[in-house]
View (spheres, rainbow, N blue to C red):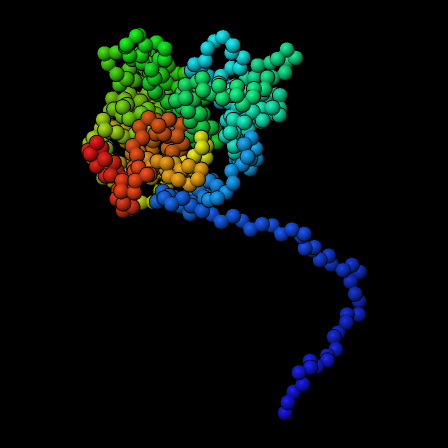
Length: 427
């Protein structure tokens, strides 16, 4: 029997009492939100970077074909920084260590003020000097005064244009400027991580403008705390090097100040006598391992780095690049303890630097050793100490590969330390 295609009628029960107020139906928005951008990673990323780190790395740089912000346009969605009195004083303390190479005649703006403006404006996400000048033109007067702005005849802070800021930055020691910014970031890391210890950076520099004609500029070994203050400094005699002066420098620092402090230096100072001296004063060392300690380097390189995952990572954007860092830590073997006193942890740090277009600029691996026990300093703390000391960033880099040559890049299954050794032997 065929059934009708028409639906059959049925009774609908209507409630006896209707609600006094009908519930509100949410209105449909006039414009729906745009879909989130697709995350795009560079072609090569650190193998130990976890998924959450890869997501941050993808968000740190612009997407391919993304349009760059117009010159002078400030980007407001960067990580905020609270510019309180203590933070400003800390930043200015580090910037005062930068040598001003400008002529004394006609100086209107202090160098520390001109050097601070691009950094403060860059916290908004754009490092363009035009954008920094636009920020300074509208910044609160009180903040500019705290940054060291000179006052005009009306008692108001002077606001430099982009050309003045550019000339100021070109008239300073660029290496010292980068050192100061890196040290300031390390000091901020200690403030943001209350468990971190006071940090003393020991570094040697040539005294500019003091070299005799045809001679070598005199060297000066300095110890600078992470708040920007100088703990001590000593000249380095022409007949020797920084190694014996290192221990004399520690003698000039009050013993109470070294207790529980962390001392970092470049790989030249990875010396057994230095380690014993620091330990006797109650401090801790964080040293990088280089060619001056071949047996120690070989023993640290032989550790099973490939079989363990990374312990901590950071992603930073600045100076026109994106830096991804990872760190692994392992306990020292009996051989390492025999080679170097008071060793508690061995670490491997990798840094990959990318351009804003995602192109790999450089890849660096650094082995190191520390007397800080794991219970007193984790991998993230060690990475913060190392970032506070500029040597791991610039002075002692060994490139893993030439980004422009695929043949030079090591295979993914090759240990980084062994590759570095082969590169050094080939050079």
